[in-house]
Amino acid sequence: MIEKVVAPRAQAEPVSPLARKTPPDRISLIPTLELLLLAIFTVLPLFLPAYLTMFMTRILILSLLAISFDLVWGYAGILSFGQALFYGTAGYGVALMARDLGITSIFLVLPASLLIGLASSFLLASFLLLGRNPPTVIFVALGTLTGAYAADRLARGWYYLGGQNGIPSIPQMTFGSYTFVQGPVYYYLAFAIVLAVYLGCRFLVRSQFGLALAGIREQEVRIAFFGYKVQHLKTIVFSLAGACAGLAGGLYTFQEGFVWPNMLGVVLSTQIVLYALFGGVGTLIGAVIGVIGIEVLSYVLSDSYQQIWPIILGALLLIVIVLRPSGLISLLVSERERIGSFGLRRRSRANRR
Amino acid sequence: MALLEVRGVVKRYRELTALDGVDLTVEEDQFHGLIGPNGSGKSTLMKCIAGAEVPTAGTIRFAGHDIVRATPAERARAGLSLKFQITSVLPSLSVYDNILLALQAQNSLSSLVFSRTRAALDDQVLQMLEQFRLGDQHVDLAGTLSHGQQQWLEIAMALASQPRLLLLDEPTAGMSLEERRVTGELLQPIKHRCSLVIVEHDLDFIRDICDVLTVLDQGRVLDSGDVEHIRNSKKVQEVYLTRV
Image 1 (cartoon, each protein chain N blue to C red):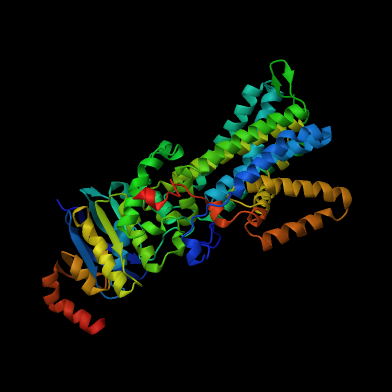
Image 2: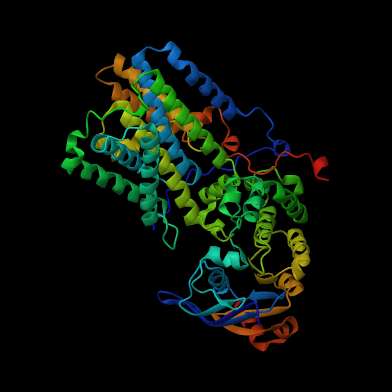
């Protein structure tokens, strides 16, 4: 069995004896970064031209995907190369609902995309995670990769799904008689959904459930001996992440008005992994920063260096991942803050006695 | 009825027979020591009882139920708890969170998601940390503790679920003499809370705390009985004098 690939567990920090006695009471940078990005995203459309608002909407949707990957890898140590599978499956699902059944109501298509993501990820988890013995990281990575590849090939070869060209001209999403078109309204819709999902995930990973996930990430075998149903917990978090990816797929489908096989495949799955690694896993906000960083860099570089921009971008990604394996977020946030605390902490000794 | 009944347990790894028809009985509130030379099968037997290994043959009954096919989590929920031979605290979590992680293991999913027991378990966490002399380190990362303190933390984690049977695999390995003495003191108060099966190379330590000793040699039970019986056993003396 291959056991060498390990979840992004933290290294115990070497700390001085004096520092050990002092609880880390300095300002937490993660909430500061979260508030900063919240403020920027809230006012952004007021200052951007329409085409850049659409660009930022795509960034929000991709952030949802990156958050879904961070949830499984950064928190539960499940290396998934299949997030695009759930994203694309949900995208195709709602595209077919709109094209063949005429269902475009926001109250039906977005919940449907979430449920398709949830169901497809649960199905895959049943094969990969619910065995008697815990699967290795490599087994899950290859299993999800194979799933994404197979779905991509299936979509390319299936005429009903539009083959290589995908499904174009999908009717727009509606709210009663109102039609959602690309622009500030769609941006704020995506923003509201990303924010709600982000807050939900944040609540989850900081709860006692989050502590159980940290246990799985750090010592999966050990915590089974405490009584944790490790495979069940992993299946739950994998399915929730699949639901997030599915929701992103639904949003993308009605933003762009078409779906195509690349939405399901290995390339996008790998891209999601890169977003999270670039920004830094295990903080949620790091994944969002990764998406912003890579997408904005791609945009700027492709404009300025039309021939060689992929080389420059690739080199930058390599530099960050090699020099800062914990991602850009590690420039600002300590490993200890990234892991966090889960109990009622920082009680003074006087209070305890 | 005995709390733990191991009957005819065999464990083979290809050509190697690690356990060859081992019997072991542990009564309620009994401290039972497993001793024997290196490679005698002590740790393998502990792993078979805890669920880390599946025996090739034989039965293991815990509280009257056959647990041979039960997963480690099912065994833990039935009241079995294990401290591994190699320290396996979670180094990047605080000492406090390590204990909380063990204490909340059998909570329902909804209570974990909504952190319903976080406040209720707080006192228990701090109480356990005080009991195991780690109260001053509760905010430290577990990975920064000394080896001895990590062993105590792990014993505390194994005890957190209030098991009916605690399995300790070499709890004093790598400890100084003083740390061994303290470990013995820390284990005494649990005498009437649960049964204990302990593997240990330090014969003085194990004689001080155990009621019954079982000696393993080459995967078989060489002898079993109270401390005095084992002390006077010719077979045991022979093994220890010739091979240890």
